[in-house]
Length: 316
Length: 316
Image 1: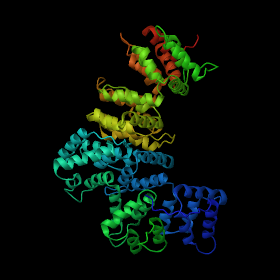
Image 2: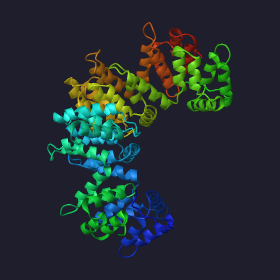
Image 3: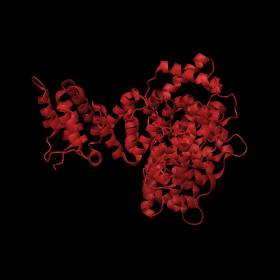
Image 4: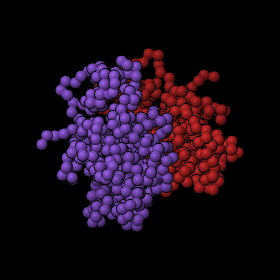
């Protein structure tokens, strides 16, 4: 569920645009007003604001925001203002261009989005970058990672609830065999993880656990520092428990001295209207600290205010 | 261009349904009337007939046709009556289920269709078969063919006209290297053929020809009986000259004693509303015999009449 709070009476896009335009005017910028407008509107409402702003002032709102804001706050607002599909395409492109084996973004977007969302991201990617996502992924990855990431971003998984329990057992057995032999990059492992429906894979992982004694991810921890094993575990976690996976991304982003603002901004902006409420609940259970308190402690200034407005706070 | 001829005054779907229903009634079936109705209507008009028939008579028109018609004529009419995307999904499913290394259908549909058509076929496949196309392809193919067919059916190629001529040269060089070393199944060969846009690949094949002296397909003929090389050549021909490729499928379907009705029916029904006119022109140039004359010679009865009605005939 969404953490967004929308006012009972929603100002018209014209009114919102005027408020934003005034916030940009004069000496200094009124960041508070900007936050107040943009964080309490749905994606459709923000889109309407963007187009209305262009109609009234003849300028792209994103360009104005880019001029007025700075640093992490700027990055976060710009990402937030994009249409969700366009935002994912932008994130994926950023990840592909500076791809490294420990990258988390590609797996996160390819697996936690629905099949139709991922397809829409591929379409938006082509419109924006004049290339297909898969050719860019192929061009920027190598070896085992290419073998894994290419079918992963090309997948259009079936999303029905049907499960073939015989198939689940036999594919659990195939997975077990290759994991035992440490053939983690085996084409069968990749085929199963990248083509089967999420419901089917849940059954397969359950069968794996029952028949072979361990949850599959435990058996994929032989070398905790191996990036390929990490990618496999991430895929499995994004399938089985996306909220817990994303909670961990947030948790790790604030773990050490120095926050990983990119990761924090990414999860908050992309999930605020989807399942950030559930992620917050998982966060609280896991850390006995509310996410909003953790963010307060770890960030500051307008960036902090912006994130807190999106994350929302529930009174105790 | 389409070879379909549509009457100036098109009967309403109701009138068409009544004519069909009468053709089914009484002793024997009036195949002539059935052909007259279904072969002179566009896909949208045939769809309207199908739904109207269901509304009026409470029966699926396809089931009625199935009961009334037989053999190749029946198969052809049933295929023709399907919505084009649903028809491709059906053809692909048939091909996947009895897949063999010399199969032509998967490559034909995956490569000659546009990126958005292929995507729509994948969606229709899921709705109809409760699985993704790629998991079925993965489950029914093995070895090098799986490595090739899986990304081929998962591809969503960019279709813009942009060409990077530097990239064309460098990828022509990569292709040349692996072809020379007879590493036809190399992941780079597969990556280039399955992910690059058709415009880009045209430039790459041209660069290959210029720099290395032979058209790429000539260099892929080392062993003319090898099924994998045949698949690679088919992919390349479907990209560079789909009409010539499909002309050959038709030509071979009538070459020997005993017609390959499946292939003939497939190309005629799937291409009649797309580019059968161009295929006919290529056929005439290549064989100095008109396609309609060849069909007349090779087929008979209602099946012959049906194909001829779709192929159309131009007066000399």
